[in-house]
Image (tube, rainbow, N blue to C red; front, side, top):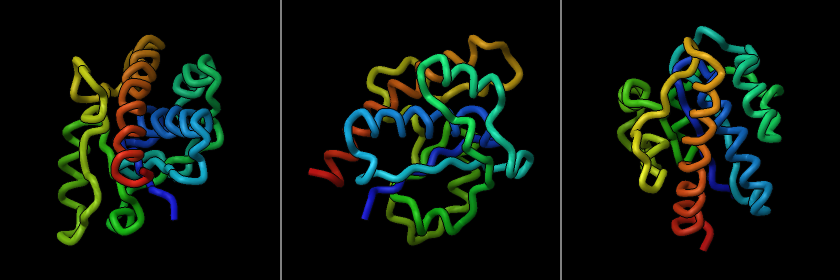
Length: 159
């Protein structure tokens, strides 16, 4: 059974689909697609069923990652039954997830950037109201955290 990772932001159209797409690409590079499954969701329902923001799609595509087929959905309590890792992009979404988490959840609920070695930031900033550079910054942060997350998964689940 694969290790399951859920990336969570507010609307599931910028940060969390970017994280999912980049992490999937890293899994493919490392030949681990059968060992680790991914998904993304938002704490809010505003964009359910919608594709990622066109700027997120374009920024990911610049790095050879296609996230255009992903569709937004809202996180729910059942996700804690299904996922070993539930990773929030920021403190606000982490607080919302903690309120939703069942008492018996034994997986990892954390900030995604907790896995980024020597990260200068603790939160992945929401690029929605900014320009293209914000989406590039998100990709840089996600790339850092993905390396650390994969190390953690290897240590705790795959070795």
